[in-house]
Length: 565
Image (cartoon, rainbow, N blue to C red; front, side, top):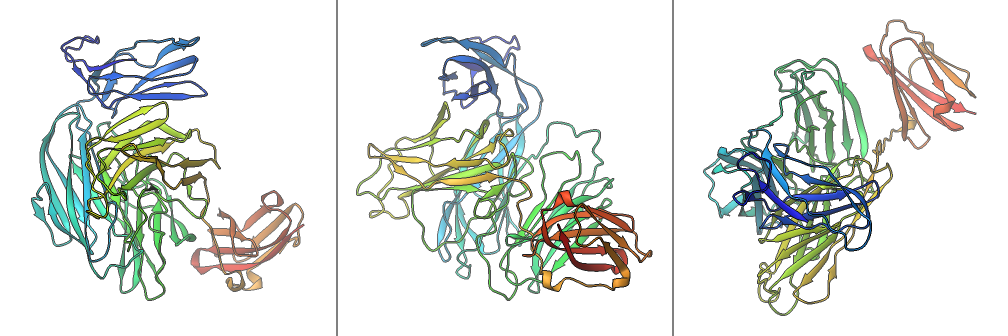
């Protein structure tokens, strides 16, 4: 147990005059277990733990804060042992640190629906003249807001002048949004939020070239056009990879190297599928950027649904948030969702991904619910030190004891659905990252229990995510691979037992790429080479029949069949 205070006189001790800090996280951890607790309005925290040796750590809400003393060793050798550890906090960097989160529990064509925005300044100095810009999908029309917007543009960008935000100050507001009657049920309609000042407090790495990549995608003349641009002040000093996924299949894998101000456009003949571009960011760039853009419902073919949220969006820093709610006609209340949804039936996500969870609830009883409590036991492979509470429909208190997260909506006075269908609904969001130590193949399970007053718990559905790499399916029509002249290439031995040699006989070409596919068209490997000879080791493949495809500069292409013994 202990108390957390803001050290006003810089003596690194807890004084009666110091301000107390609430909603700060304390964890007790060792190699096997992690226990945790949240400070209350009086600054006090409580962390229950088992017997054993632990390191007690205070987790500041941003890197701008520092504990005078942290990572303290304690040992509990039996029942009822107790340690009292007070934390005194000082400012490390004089910098504002804005964070923003937005969420809509549901959106429906031809209906108004509430949208909720929460924001905080987790920095050590006032965020002066702060404002929030929100860009809405063209199908969304803001109707009203509890905090009035100061301007709106023709491309649906709304600005909210929220003024000076003191250190550790948080606030919320809500809007009423109308979704156009022509909106397609099953498609996502995106809302991009950006809070200013968007300061990155730590200076960039001296190794950063100054280049910075952004991507965008749009539908033009029923075709998708992606654009990768270097918006930084420096030139790239090497190539970075990007991929384009059609629904759930890898369509394009390539690389770019751009000077400052340069861009590359990638046009795609669309047939109604969902297309996602994901690019690496240049090395050592500030923030945590993975440039990503999604275009769905473009083209004259049959529209595909439920792919827009399968990959994480490019939320470079806490001051940006992207939300793409799916238009629905109806939904089951009292459920739980996790974003990104993840790839495929296994819901694959990359290691160390941040997951945003939304828990929705509805009072389907016959009387007012005066209190709602949501209990959520966090999976062992979720890193509690990265927990961040998010937007909600009603004000709440929360705490984390061990790995048990609890949201409490006191005096919520939630009407029942027969008396007030719209008013009977509520939700809460939070985010948390997958533990960086989670092994590949780990499955993250999560569900919640919802209590209305003293009634038995309603258990939500279970969300699942699997940690993976290279999980995107790669298919090609192996029956229609490009066949070049036999005089262009020689492959021997074929069949082969240890190594197959590929010799390019046309010396005009200098740069090549080899891809190997199984009989179903699934791509197994790809290699680039800059000579006219490539060696394929049997160790890369099991015995069987495979197809190869070689492409090169100046239009070279060839393919064929090989057999591994």
